[in-house]
Length: 234
Image 1 (cartoon, rainbow, N blue to C red):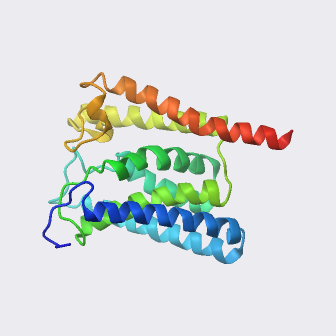
Image 2: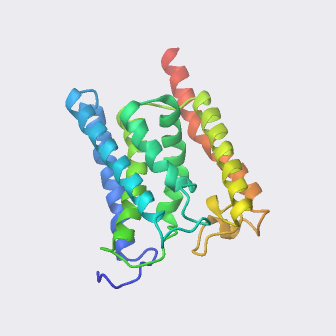
């Protein structure tokens, strides 16, 4: 793959990333179930979380320095900007709210970015390509590791918590969009690259099916765990 080649969805580099995600997910489940409770693995996970958080913060600071700074898109208000630090904190602390967001954001909104990436620019090994995919792979892997590796399963409280926090984020993002004519969260416009939003109608009407779809999918992601937990208790 040439450094000057433009990234294209479902090109060679994209398929490599998807295969890495699948293989990494399987490996993390095995590691979590066999050694996740050991001190060594826990410290390695916390060290990785700290490193990813530092890199993420450094990248955000870099993007906010002139001439890259632009108030319409440089603020860390995209869900992808927040999902990385949240996943890192969930991996470090196992706090319930962070684990909940890592699960729901990591396995839906983040997965959509893996399948329909909003990425325009050079292909591997350009730093923007690497930064985009490392961030999204990390978020997805943390969700898989915590849920299936360490068996930290969601319940309806987790569902309500994730919905409430996501609604608060959407309100803040939309207020900022109105103030600066931005498009954080793609609440004002669809991304220029192809995405699921393309089949959900024009703005602002696509926001309604998106909200309903998220609520339904997250509920379906919660329900099997609550049934399994109830059967285990009985």
